[in-house]
Image (cartoon, rainbow, N blue to C red; front, side, top):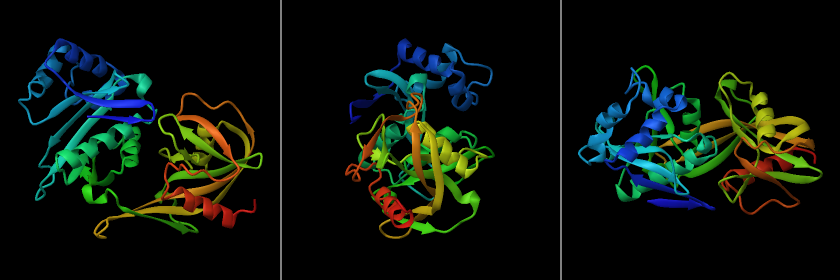
Amino acid sequence: MSASEEDTVINFREMQDTEEDYRLLLSWFSNPEVFRWYGQEDFPDGVSLDLVKEKYRLRCLRADAVTPAVIEIDGRPAGYIQYYKTDDCPGESDVWGIDLFIGEDDFRDRGYGTAILNKMTGYLFQEKKAGKIILDPEQDNKRAIRCYEKAGFIVKGRIGEHQLLMVLEKNMQGSIVDVCFYDEVSDSLLKYAVIVSRFQGQWLFCKHKNRSTYECPGGHREPGEDILATARRELYEETGARKYSLKPVCVYSVVRSSAKGADRNETFGLLCYAEIYELSELPAEFEMERITLFTELPDAWTYPEIQPRLMAKIMETVSL
């Protein structure tokens, strides 16, 4: 399986029973960030080449229900992914599970995780006829949870004391999306902030490093973070804005419902408006490649079902 997004090619290469592949896994599990979330349970006393072989050899020999694969990005090994049919949802058939991690530091925090998941879930739905796909991240692994949410997974419950059950159902693909607006909701419901922005009389939009479309600055709220602090942080990280006025406009929600109406999920965020007076250089360590100014609104939206609605709300509410 392979997929390209702009100039980036993501490929899943099934692991082989070779010294090279086992050493690749060992190098990733030796990374403290990977080991913290994905290695401690399997290797509580530390990881070694022999232990990696013991854990993964049957999978590499195709003598196990789990299919292991190396994630390759532009031909470079970048991480690990595995998929398997599971009975973790009693009474339901065609349920598949996924586990994955980015092993190389220079591929982390660049938006690849969501793209990887989108390709793998598409493969499982289309080729394996999956009806539901599950993930079980550690509840404190906020980076992974945000990535999974961006790919459409929804928290449905818990597995044990420390893991979440996150689910993506086939009938939620191609789901009906609606945008609703509220004067206020409980602060605990606000999961992200989006900032519609102008600079020197023009609309300011961001272009992600791995996309050819445009989007408003914004992102997910960090644990314990004030929602306006989220807006200020995201505005700087995605535009380099140093001096600006920031105004909260309203709460909005994105409602996703299956075509049959059997499933409904609503998530809430804060919609803000920013008038930017001074821009610094765009921070290179974050996800955006560049900012672009528009006199008219762009045609190529990253979220075409959502962003035009937010822009319309700003234009009817804010005096420009």
